[in-house]
Image (cartoon, rainbow, N blue to C red):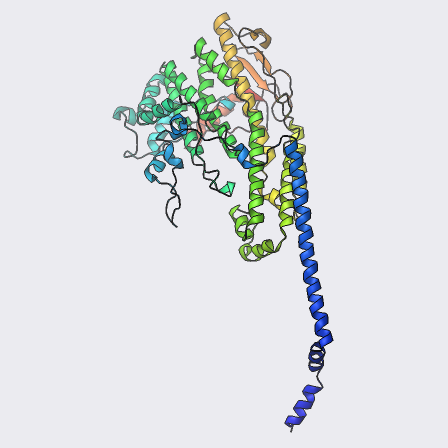
Length: 563
């Protein structure tokens, strides 16, 4: 039987007691304190050095870019404020989109005039624009007005349909003029708003009051006007086509002019998404221009104005500004993350797709423990990626784009941002924010080609009106019908042109594959009968007969359907 003395003697002989006694010795305690202080000093010194290195590298690189005229501050891209009475965007239909409640409570709508906001954002909710009847000039498709009206009636309830004649509503005629009249009647309810916008377009400025200054995170800025403007362009397109078919050319021309104005109403915004939506609006307007040209509807005076207006578009130059604005947004985000006491929350607000469910706990802790210098390096590599890959040489001073160079840029970006190297080399922010270059440049290049081809098509139509037929060569247009011939933005050479046997012409760029396919797009290669068969079958089955256009394949054509 063990006694208390035996237990005490056992404890006195344990290793644990001897270690504790050794640690409690003054010499050991002093050594531990000095070691801990040294460790803290080393860590603090490491943080200080990393902060100094990062800040110095970023400020040096930034200074170098700014000395070359580059603007890295988002403030430099914000369009100046204009008086409300001179601002198109402050017309009553659009103004509620940016009339915000100063400090909305949780669950409260950020918009002061919720009815006005709903009226603008729901302007086209009862109409269909991506239906089976939707045409696309890029693949040679017209819009079938009778089919479009039928589908609108089938997909909207009687209570929400615009006021229209009951006989038209039940059986829209297949005759083009009758269908056009029915479409205009169907769109009559939209006329007051369209006329309001037309009157507002005479104001000298267009500046949507986006909350650039209020939002510290540029990716959280609300931009509801982009969808609204696009929807209005869709309505105007359908109405312009109906007006052309019913021989109301002057009204159709006014609607086309308004579409082109709306396209440029967001031109000065520093966001890449605004630029891409602007391209979409432009393609919508071109549908009406193209169909009017295909049917010989436009008069000489209207062709002159359209040609002049189309020559004003420079999407490749505008892309450069949009990309620089995007770079400025990312730099501001990097600054915000660096300065935030809760960096994990800021990253979450960027919509990090690769974040794990425990990101808000583990990831936020790690981010908060990182020295500020890391985020200076993140900003530097983000800016460097733009400068050395995205902005460098992809668009030449002569307004050309070289797809092979863009593809090389995309490959370099992919390698630059590949994990895990992106983590060790401070490229995580770039991985999260840098847009996909391979998709942006083809769209911009095609939009510029479309503007150039449309302007040339106007000049060719003017020549036909004057001489009875199209010229054998484009050079015959200058200087009477066009001052200078636009070049192919891909090759830098003249666009390819030839007259066709049906009295029409074919005009095209070699397209993104940099190969002259003889005027063939993925949609067309001599298979019109098959295409019509597929469309008819799709229509019978209730499916969509819309043909999708891929700007990265085939030639970029301007051609008309057979009469």
